[in-house]
Image (cartoon, rainbow, N blue to C red; front, side, top):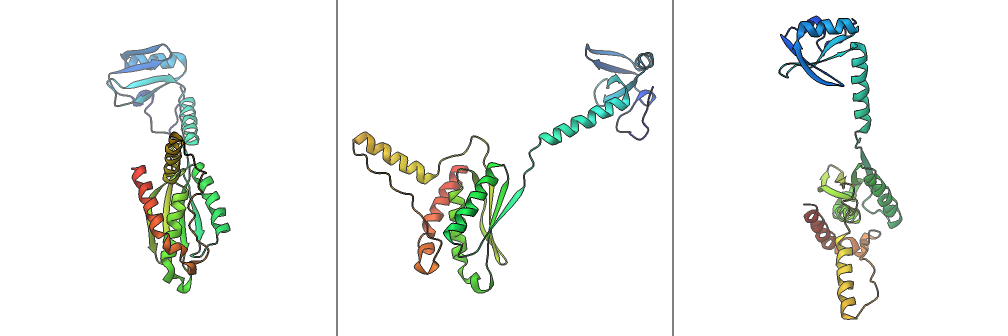
Length: 236
């Protein structure tokens, strides 16, 4: 019989000192005196391995201990490989990010969420740009609203030093929802269709993030805040 003194997480052979054990195998289980189980192990050229010491009586297997440890290690490796590894991906903005850059980063964030990763988006305020932190907040609110179908907000925008952070977590598969704006538009179109007064489809409201001087960001702050409020209520 083989023993591995380096591995002590399981008791084997003479280390098992209870009066009787339950032997499990392909053909079921049998309760027998421990001495009889040891004799069976010797006859088969294997080890008596205790796999469940807290059971009454303890559960054991007749198996080569080295093979048993290999099987346990292989099983743990397979379970670890099946576990989904969640990473946190960062998306960085400036307080005056232009539309092209915004759409580029929005696409990447969507891909990150679809892959099951979290997203930490932040606006970095350099120098005196911290005076325009409201613009950064509106930008992050818009970002969360545009990603409503793929992610849910874990925390509202918060300023930490020179950075304002927003955290998004991926939605579970099959739980993606249409944005509130899209649902409202479809509901209105359905009502018009029923009344025979179908009107052309109106474009979505776009929040201007390019030129803070024109008042677009601040003027739309309430719109974004209301949209995110609906988003968080829907997630709850």
